[in-house]
Image (cartoon, rainbow, N blue to C red; front, side, top):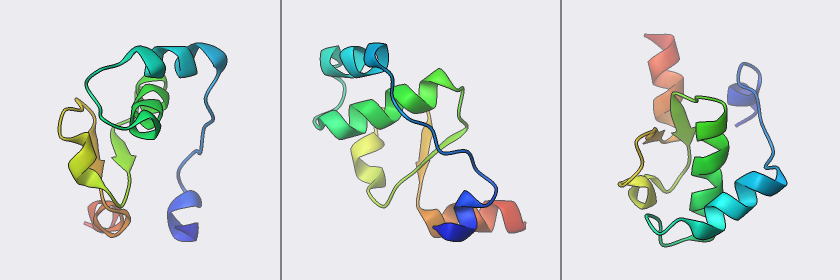
Length: 74
């Protein structure tokens, strides 16, 4: 994860993103909703997570940390 953070920007959630995540019904888990809303707010290409299955409804591709590293090495 430290390697990934050396070239990615980590962002936080603001009040409006938290409220929007609470209202979402596409995800079963609030934390996943919040990750999605944060990623969406910065037009992210990927969501980096160890639990990609929970992002099957996301229009932002969820990838494992090791798979992201492979994408940038190729």
